[in-house]
Amino acid sequence: MHHTNDLGRDRLFPLVCRLAIPTMLAQLVSVLYSIVDRMYIGNIAGIGDLALAGVGVCGPIVTLLGSFASLVGMGGAPLLAMRLGEGRRDEAERVAANGFVTLLALSAVLTALFLALKDELLMWFGASEATFGYADTYLTIYTAGTVFALLATGLNSYIIAQGFSGLGMLTVVVGAVLNIVLDPVFIFLLHMDVAGAAIATVISQMASAALVLYCLLRKKAPVRLALRGLDWALARRIIGFGLPTFLILSTDSIILIILNTVLQRYGGPGEGDVLVTCATIVQSWFLLISMPMGGITAGCQSVVSYNFGAGNIERIKRSILYIALLSLIFCVLMTAAAHTRAAELFVRLFTQDAETARRSVGFIQVFTAMIIPLAIQYTLVDETTALGRVHLSLACSLLRKSVFLAAILILPAALGAEQTFWCEPIADGVACVVTSCLFFAFIPKVLRRRVGQA
Image: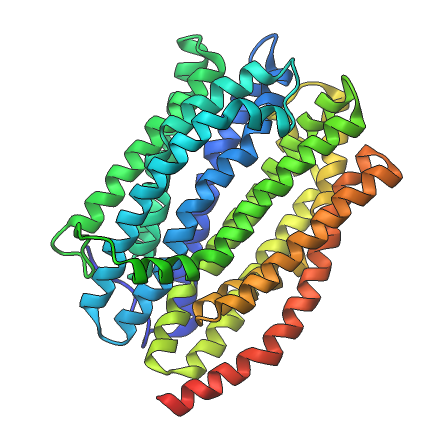
């Protein structure tokens, strides 16, 4: 492993780019796990649209499972980087070891829990009699491979936190490319339909997990993974650091589940399934924005945490500025793409029905109307976490979800099912304003105190 990034001394803007771009691309590629599945499923002859709606119901549940990887991965990575910045390598290795054991324990609990409750969850969260069979098949197989999904994603953060962003990207790319190759084989060549898509995903995640473990177990790794007993105090601290990111992802999932349920209820028979199909396509587009942007902001947490541990305040300020700039550029480009033929071409990957495609493009434009302010919110929340101020970032995360939830309960009841898609831009705009005010009110004081301690 060749260490290419010095978090404390490299020129900042190139360093941020080297950390952000590979991590952003890794998250973009990881989105392909769900998007490629949905794309192929939507084009299965005779059952495409119904199967897509069924897998769309599973999408937020799958993301909810994956958010537990971020709880441990994004929680441990800033701690690991801080310990490296302080020159305490042994402590960094303790963080990695406890993260590994915590991920194994969570995998066992979540697999048992979700397999036991999946039938009730699917019906509560937007499946209809016509789509339940497809949803049940996909979720059963995917849940059985939870341990590979959690290890691949959670431990990958510990690779990136050591400065190996390119290697972190490679572990994701290997799994995603394998999924792209295996999907048509299992779905069409072996005629396994929805089950084939799920099996291809689990095999791909298994390959990513194996590569991540290999990278962390190598003797040349600066922070090696070793199996140790669980330190409850350290595990709680890891979880505390990861809680804001976990809540962002898990509540996103819960809210999308509520979105599907609301669309089914207010859409009614037939129309409800059509709206859930549209929502599945819209959510796939939104993942193309939120996951890479999360890659930028979370992937650069290591440079902020490292320099906070080292007491280098000026590098922290400039790092956050550059991270925000990259996020804004990305979101401006994605906003422009939503209003070009790119959105239409994207939608056509999932459905050949002209009316469903037309409505989905319109819903994409509504749902992503405020992603430019969202870039600011993502940056400030993740870098507040990197500075160890978990409660503040947690409050900002919960605010956005609370506004979304309030809107999702009010808009469809008052204005009709289609107006549900306005919930996201309303929440994004409010969250950006409030998060910015809180950040500039509290974080300068945190940095001044760190100067006094250095």
